[in-house]
Image (cartoon, one colour):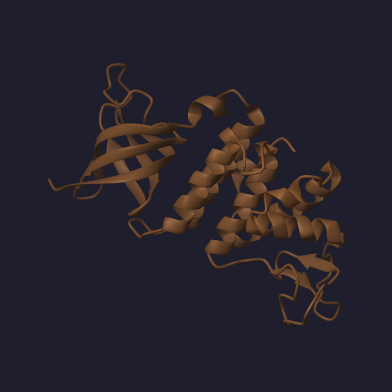
Length: 246
């Protein structure tokens, strides 16, 4: 069988038969890959723990008829270890993996930007941002905004998302696409403060310095808006969000 190599992050796994697993990965060059890891559930498996969720690996695959087969895996970063000892970071990481899995729907379609965002988020969760450590929920919210934006649903945080009227505006509505003017504002829209909107803008652009002095109340408000926005555009709610400690 022909083979190929790629750098990838394990998103999830499913049992197959008595000793195998189906591994879903997001790779640098080949997008989403679903492949069989044969014998991985045996204690004598050559893969050890390298094919668990959060593992960043250099892998070799053999092309199969329906599913490819993982033939080799070398650990590049073992994110599982530091995340496993921190509940907040682990649950935020689960949201990040689920989001990546949902946003990259087509298998073998290149998704380099989504892959790089995923790696950046996992690095930030385990080693801190460019401006030092940040709460896991903050890193998760930044990832959600940026990954949804890359997928084509960037929130409007200044001009009206419906009519394009120049902002700033007072109301935020996830279904409408972000900030909306008074004329376009749907019922039950949120009315966040300008501090919250500035904070959301910093999360969207990755300006970590601007997030340094935002208080917890404004962070929680922004986090609720991010969750609503991401859930709306993903159509089905992110199940792992229910476990996040805010």
